[in-house]
Image: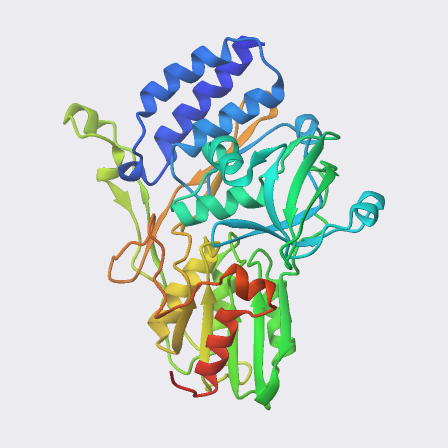
Length: 408
């Protein structure tokens, strides 16, 4: 009903206006957005179209933590094809696909580039149909998120793709949007993966910081770091979670205490309206930054370390980057991070809708903020399509050289 849709829109507007921590970064006219979306909500429309319009509204905040969560019955109707997509040089590549009857027939080549979707050039499809609905704080992160979700639509519908294979040949395939938002994503990366390279170099791929188990698994993998000559912590796919789990890992990697990211949250004081102050962000609550001490219950690692970052490194993983830099234990290699720090609050909306947004601002201990720009690596390395299709991980190779003591 139009009245119910209007109630959802108005609640999103009010909750964001009251709770969002980054109003100084919002470039859109939020009041005008309310008026426009109330008019749109009054129109006859499907639930899927309403969901897309809400995503466009929330994307105006420029917050990588922001999201619209539709009701369960609607989540079951929104799906994507079981393809793991990745943006490399802003070009969508198929990294992996989940086996099912359709995929066994279609057999989309891994590392193939998507040239067109439904006959529309991929760049145009992403820019016009996906990007406006994608919440992110930096252009690079917005684009990579849009690539990940570029095939989302109504469950059971078919998407026609034109692919360019690694060898240069082109072919078309059709895939079905079969994995709904209610389903477990079959291509979810493990929270942590440990790989050994030659010469005693070890890679710890930390893909999520959502559970304390990631710290326990790190500790089990490295009871004493025996034989480890160089350590690479790969955070290129890590976003969200809780910062303390990252600090728990970092406490094993340094011999001295180090300060971590500081945070603050808006304090709303109605008297500011009397004083004609623009918004409540002139008043903040925020404690001084915490200090993390080395883990005393098990051996630490004192050898060379490199941490890998990308435009997808966000949230708690960015707090890890802050703490790592403060610990002065090595270098960050790769690309600037997502610029989306902060704690996300989930807010219940009418009719079983929900939304998320950032309610804290995180910064370096000296107060330097990185929201909207990301944390810059000491060694910038960006992957290329040619490297990826040749099986080369240029960022990892540069880190391997660094921890092995090779200079260039």
